[in-house]
Image (cartoon, rainbow, N blue to C red):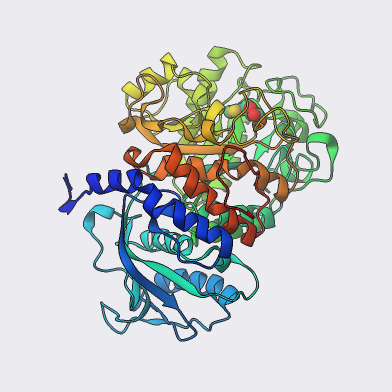
Length: 536
Ligand code: TNX
């Protein structure tokens, strides 16, 4: 099979899967004991499209290794700087970053924007490891970044350690040619139910970037809190952001902090998608401004966990002034093309009001130059052709979503019973909820986003997203416990071709991440479904 002039080694992919015992398990077992042994290319998560090892060949990073980058590319230099920072900490080597002397460096690690197959597109890459050098080649910086995430996983797990480790630092020889299945590979953090400070968001960005996630959706407002400063409506953050579930001390991001989050994410090739949920899930806003309520009376701040009791006042014109000003400020702060306007569980808004409201809200977003993402409830209103629906149901058929998809609406797949990271793993899980069922790793991994929802084929699917709602989540450790190991499983569904989908091989590769997470200090859940190497 040929795509854009490049042979697609489907048979090779099948070989990788079926010979996982040769390239997978033994290497995984060795990593477990030493944490410093070269890792097989077959251990990477998400599974690469093609991974072809070169037997008996190893590249060793030493104190004299240089990182070469595409001359004149500040993006390549920045990516190299991030790689160097990780490798310097654990190896103690200087790892200088310099412009590549030629298009084919004969030593060191090269990050180059030339020579990649056209078929890997903007986010893919080719990675070659010989005994003399490593070369990551991509068409765009995003592809270089993805290739570097693969390279991190090819290095011994101890490379992620914050302190100097003994080494050696070997990378197994071979070639990887890799590119994503879906454009949208997302994670979502609900910073409204419990506020998560910028440091936690940045750390989560680092963690999801390693698995080639390229979208972070921030759920910035809900009944319990408003989490972003809006200059035209200052009480939203000052008053509406003053509490959270349980009533603890809370907060919000200043606009400067929000910009910092965007820049931090952008440097890791992650787009921020901000969500202001409406017309329901709006108690924090209604409590902050009496005039937004139909009866002109502001309700109290809310610290419980019920849903569906609040609604913006659809019949008042000030509601649309509010939308225009709030969404206008957020659009101006956000470089990405999307504004998420929620739209879920609007049970206190009539169907007719919901349609009226969503119609105007979509026009307002369009007037600010952005496209709407909405929870899939939005397809119950007329949608613009640019509006994207995020499916969060627990069934495999939804007539309204299927009809919308057939009319051209793109869908982000977030089936709650597979990807809701706030669901408990099992009845003994201390954190999380259970309304969509227990979700262990096999449930998170065992489905196909392109063939899941009846009438919504792969071409209608923009991608996949794993939301983490925070009714029961308060700290980074809580976030990590629910996200790992399920987030990497979901990330693989977004990136890897279905031809690589195989629980037995995935289980080995996922287990091999355990020592990495230990080195990174990630508080992951030791699911009994995963073959963790000894000691991880
Ligand atoms: C449903 S999913 C919600 C959220 C809750 C979540 C808890 C969706 C669009 N709405 O308001 O936080 O369940 O799992």
